Length: 177
Length: 252
Image 1: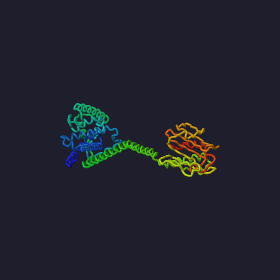
Image 2 (image 1 turned 45 degrees about the vertical axis):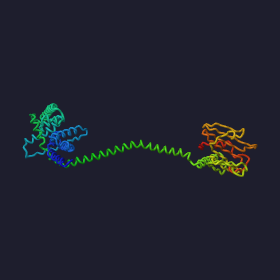
Image 3 (image 1 turned 90 degrees about the vertical axis):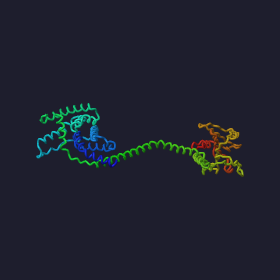
Image 4 (image 1 turned 90 degrees about the horizontal axis):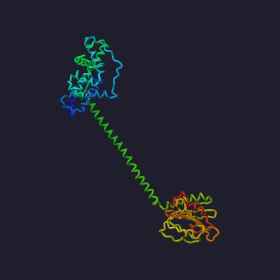
């Protein structure tokens, strides 16, 4: 690869690695796996950089690669599954607002428990639509399906998520809004 | 749960994001290593495939080669049979005859063969010089020398492809016999008295289908030098028949 192309990739990777990792985290619910997914996606992009460097929306392409990488990883029968046999208890932070902390903990619960119970493709649609703020058309391009499929997957995903959240709320005593 | 709540929940879910330790250069290095590893793997695969193809194709070539070699060896050996030196062949047959005769006649001493290509003359009794022979006469012949209770003497052996005359062989003897063998050869045998009360000459001739004639003859004298006259032959037709039918000798 030419030095200029390599420099272009270097800049793109440095600028978008963090956001890609966040998206990957919402897909898989684990930061380590998310980092691996992000790096694998960027490696694939590096190999194809000569061909894709002139695309109009490179970050959309990167999201597409990330999504495919994650779905491929999930399909593998020998895929790594982290065994969470115990979690360290959160240490109380006296400096933070208890209400804010509660909201953050609930959000983490939302990801770790509720979102991870949604089927993968529906989960991907929800993340791309509500975290990445992509339009239906953009999600359809990223997922390689029709807009109608995106809409139906979104509806189903939301219904599944709401059901799970309601269950979580009723078990924890929190009132679902 | 509204869509806005889901959106906020997702944004809040990544609030405790661990610090990102990402270096694009490290990633590029890893990709380059992976590429070189893949190239090496492809090279190994190609080499393995070539070796496999070679090992599969070689057996196809080698046996042919081996066959050729074997064929050549066979040809050599089969062609070496006719090209085997006449002396060696004659000596081989002579050694076998000595061995066979020694087993059958244990009273014989100093058994040895002088068996060579070319016709060995038979000395008539009391002859003073060897009879004439034609230089182009090619025969395997010789003498089986032996010493019995009377003294030294010999048996004459001739292997030739000349035409065989039964009348000449029998010489008018009424004891002349002809026996067809299982291998197709014909065994002729005769004992001549020549107006003597005892056998003066015992001879057997094995006539092969190929035209080869093997004659073994015992005389009442030593045919190798024409001396050593005795009353009768040292061995009779029975022993001569066993010699000429010896299975260990490949006459042809």
